[in-house]
Image (cartoon, rainbow, N blue to C red):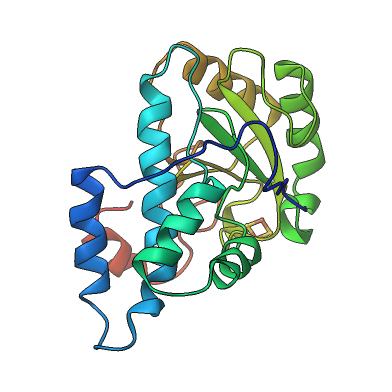
Length: 219
Ligand code: FES
């Protein structure tokens, strides 16, 4: 799904600078790379910029989630002595970077074959109906943005969604509505399988390596 990317949009802030907390982290990331290869830190710095904006958004009267303004990409280009276009190229390639404002909770619905076969279309529909928005839209209260993404690598526990940094698996329509309501009410929701399945074992429980499973206390 193509994400919005508009460098001239009204929502773009004029300036961006890392706060002291994040500036320290940028230095740590840059220090991971050999001298002369600091530009390799671009992905880490983009992630930090997104997280800083998300931290600010969590405290705002009308909340919003993490995204990367053009001013942040330009600032990163300056910090890493690279052309801004190269930073835009990286930021637009990877789907984990949001290049336009998003809600406090970014609900990324996996729509690839295994999730689709297990009911992803129903999950998408129930999210749209319950929140009153379509994909790539944000609710009026700034809390939720919906997005469809390709396989997130948790196919065994399909269907699943990613909300901000965490995965929520083994979903059905009722569970999805309950999760959205709990988030709206400011409650924490259990990360991972919503049916209590441990890791990626068969839905009916482990069928092999039983002794090992007992030792690991998953049965
Ligand atoms: S297909 Fe959905 S996680 Fe892989």
